[in-house]
Image (cartoon, rainbow, N blue to C red; front, side):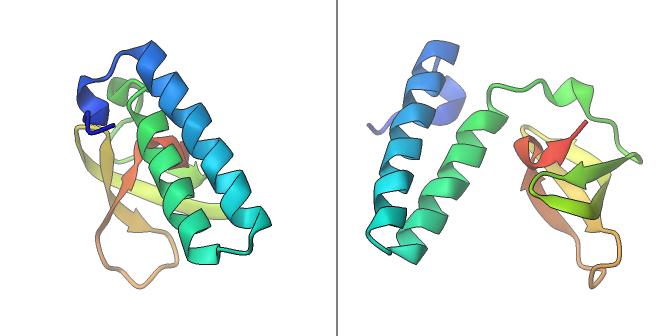
Length: 103
């Protein structure tokens, strides 16, 4: 499917997420570590398009999904990406899909 996540309906996104999760499960079972990682990132990207970026505020801290105790401070939002810095990180600005941030 060559349709962008941004142009998919909620139903299409949920189907895509299910399909990607199934592919990731198979890749993990077959020991295809890099393939699994790519599919997991795609799942996070698709999930970001199901979320409302207006629920995330610049200047606030959010815990990172799957990384307890790690926090991300948002400088600004661009679409479904939060740009900012990891607390205790190397100080480099990075962009994360909002699906990786816990409210």
